[in-house]
Image 1 (tube, rainbow, N blue to C red):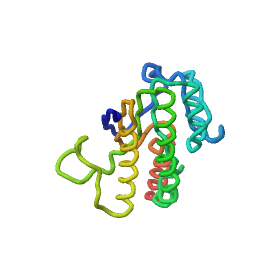
Image 2: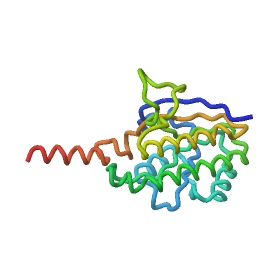
Image 3: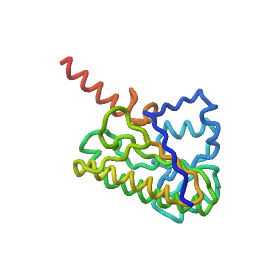
Image 4: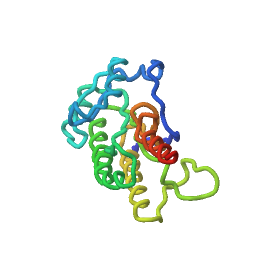
Length: 209
């Protein structure tokens, strides 16, 4: 039996440290990182405050992912794997595109295999709300991803179609596709201290010269 699929649409997420009820479920935090040095300071502080335990594993190493998930045996797995650049510019996004796709696609495969072996029944996957086919009004879950567009747009849409299709075809799990846009708040591009904040500040400064 194929996985049950639902979509949840949102425009972003704000994580507040003073809202413990919103993060009380995350008592064991699994972060698939290759090095402790890659954990952002703000995220490390939040993990420490809520009593979460970071677990190091390479998302591209199937055996490491299987071992980590098998040891913890979580009730649910939330896949937010990305390899995005520090700076949100066209040049850096283009340079990171293939690396990011590899992490998303191969990481998704490894996580699905690991959760199946560990008996995990719920899987939430980061999808995207950017690649719907054009049409009148607001898009809902019945609107397909775009299939005829520029090469770059088509490639991105195919990536998310592949991610969702593989999860949907995994038997024995309840699958939720999270089709949203950008994260915003501490530790993201979209904050006063983040890259977009820096770009806005720089642009505002140049306008006053």
